Image 1 (tube, rainbow, N blue to C red):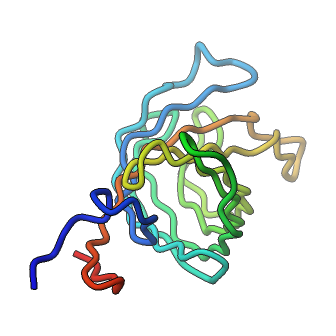
Image 2: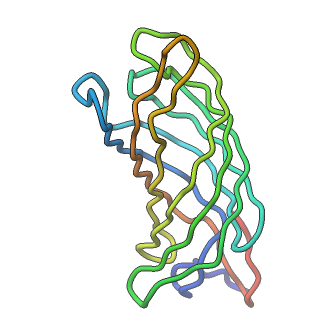
Amino acid sequence: MPLSPVWAQGKPTANHIALEAFSLHFKKADERKAVHPAVGYEYSPQKSMGWQVGFFKDSFDSRSGYVGVNYSLARFGGNRVKGRVILAANLVRKQFMKNGGAETHFVPMPILELSLTPSVSVNITGSPQLDYYNGKHTNGVVVFQLKIGLNYTSCDREYPV
């Protein structure tokens, strides 16, 4: 029985490769990089628990990574663009402050996923300015991340690649 790609059948996918990210910083954007090479994996089935893991270069060009869990709400939207809200909680290892070292922090991340096609979507997420001890804080940021769906379907069953 031949497999056909999920995008040929118009069905949403739960398995994604997360790629390049672009960030908009609220303050001191000239001191930070806006484009972040990245690769990751996200499993986010609708109305269910999932997980994600990835590696990226952060705004200070430091090697960084994350691992976490997510819960995806039901899809919404019209014929052209569909969306869903994903609630994620990650352990993030990155350089949070200029001239600082790598640190690991728990970061809750609400995500708005916009599906451009059944296999291509964009995550829009970010964090507000976070205040830490001794008057230290991080800059608020909005992050856009490209995702490519991996599922293939046959007879209404999904087979991850």
